[in-house]
Length: 323
Image (cartoon, rainbow, N blue to C red):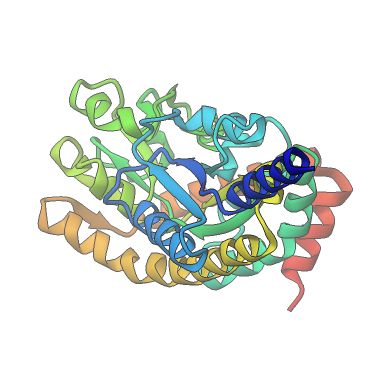
């Protein structure tokens, strides 16, 4: 009887110890620790640890130090990382719904981008759920403009230029304007500019500042073509393994990170352009011809997206365009 009692106590103690054991998550991101996306994620990690009473520790791995940008989604899906940050538009090869916020001139203000996110989220959630993941939170970049070593008055000036293609959408733009696409991820961008591997690309003011684009390229055309978003994904098995109170702590911290991130993104848009200008970047509105040319590119890409996305895509765009 004594042996049975001791054994039962040991099992109970082991179960209690396991219940209170600290869970540890790895959260890789492709961006520098000083980028506002990464800073926001670091705050999320602190909030989770505090709100869970230390029961969940999230370690943020910045600047593609754990997985490169194209590898992060697969790492989360397979459970190699419990969570991770991706640029949604990079995965349009899996489904066109992911590419929606990278369609030029569909949503060009933060209010429009938020509405597009809200109407498309159910479809995005469904896609990710089928892969064993969900979005914890999503935060936008600044509106996208053109950085170029050459002065650009129309898309004719981009023909033959070595163009950074970091997503299917930016590769398609290169094709439509006659540029030479070169696949370069952000962690490799500074070196690619310095060595002449690329001469032009489209991205945000924050990326331009983070990568010291002003050291190699001096022209920025503020086309405000689209506002892409990053999403922090979580592996559902990892999330479901948490106790209910810790799940609630993660969900609450994620909602706060999303609200905080949207405010920071909008506030920093003008700040980054000011910082670029202070370092020698010429910040310019596109000429009427360049603006018209780029909007024509956008119209072609919107039509292509609607064709690829079918009825589901049309329903999202219809909902987005309703007053």
